[in-house]
Image (tube, rainbow, N blue to C red; front, top):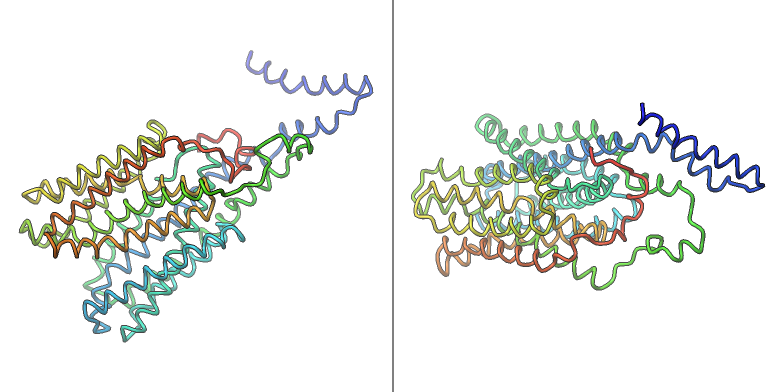
Length: 463
C-alpha cells in the first residue's frame, strides 16, 4: 500500500507542477511533454522484450555459422578425393577460404557502418548456406579454390556482421553477454561435426552439404524477420533520437553529443585487442590441426582416442563460454582475460609435454576453458571503441592467427619436435594475459561510439 501511494505521488507531482506553472503564466510544454512521454511511452515499455527477441535471433545466427562451417570441415577428405587434389594442392585451395574471409572482413566493416549490422548479417546468412553446397560440385583444384574463395568471403562477412550486431546488443543490455553468442557458435559447430560424422558413411558430400544449405536457408528465413524487426541498431538509435534534442548550449557542453572520432590511440587499442584475438585463435587452430597428431604420433594413442583431442578442447571451450557472462559480471574483463590466459598457458604446457594420453587430454580441456572467453572479450572491446570497423580489425587479426598458427607449428615441428612446437600456444596465451593486464585501464571506456544505447534502454539487466 505504501509503495502504491509513492507511485501515485510520483505521477501526480508533474501534473500539480504543471497547474502551478500555467497559473503563473509559464509555458511548460517543452519540459512537460518529454516527461509525459517518459511515463506513457509504449516503446520504452517494449524495449526489454525486443532485446530478448533480438538476443535469441542473433544467437541462432551464431549457431548457424558454426553448424555450416563444421559441416564443410568434416567433408574435406571426401572433397579432396573427389577432386583428386594432392595434399599441397588441397592446402592451397583451403588457403582460399582464409583469403576470402580476411579480404571480406574489412569490407564488411564498412558495409555495416553504411547499411547497419543486421541487414548485412541477414544477407550473409543467405550467402553462407548457398556457398557451402558448391565445393562437392567441383571437379578440379582450380575451380575448388574459386568456390572456396566465395565460401570464405561469406564466412568472413557473417562473422564480422554478427559480432558487430552483438557489440551493439551488449551495449544495449548493459550486460557482458558476448561469450554466450560464441558459445552458440561452438555448440553449432559440435552439432554440425557430430551430424557430419554420422552421415559421412551413408551420404556423399553433395547431398549432405545440399541438406545443410536447405537447413541454413530455412533457419535464415525463419529467424531473419525477428532480427530485422527488433534488432537494427539504427532503430535503437532512432528511439533515442526521438527524445527531445538538447539545446545548442547544452550540446556544446556535453561530450556525449559530440560526433564520435577515432583517434590514433583508439586505433592502437583496437590493434592491441586484435592481437589478443590472434593469440587465442592461434591456439584454437593449432589444437584442431595438430592435437590429434600429437596424441597418435608422440604418445602412441589409438586413432579413435586421438580424434577425441579436439572434442575435449571444443567441449571445454563451449562450457567456458556458457559461464562467460557470469565470470565477466563477477570478475570483470581484465581479470577474465588475465585468468583465462594464465589457465590456457598452464593447460597447454600440460597438453604438449605430458608423458601419457590422459593428462594430455586434460591439458587440452583446460586450455579450452582458458581460451574460451578471451576472443569474445577482445572483439567486444574493439567494437565498443571503434564500432564495426573495430570488430572487423580484431576479427581479421584473430582469423589471421588461426591461419598462421598451423603452418608455423608445422615448421617448428620440423626444426625441433611437435611437443615443443605446441608449447608456442602456451607462450601466446601468456602474451594475451600480459596484454590484458597492460590494457586494464581501458576496461570501462567512455561510450563515444554508441551514445544512443544508454539513453533509451532503461533497466534491462534482467534480459
